Image (cartoon, rainbow, N blue to C red):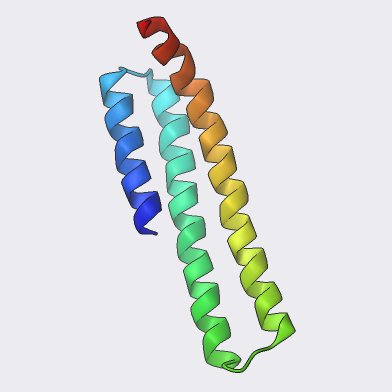
Length: 94
């Protein structure tokens, strides 16, 4: 979660510095919020699974892996969105 929060801060600072458009802000805010929300859900799933199944259980591992996978997929989508928004602006600087 810390990594995602620091990344979100870096993205917001980059967006300010690169003066992105209102529509680009919407996309960046949406994917940033989604990554943070997915990370919170992943944490909740892990805590719940640990509570109901403190012993090693293949199904508990599966639930944790699927929740972590959802965060990964959302993070990849956010990174792709970031590339679409920021890459042309960064290239234009050079």
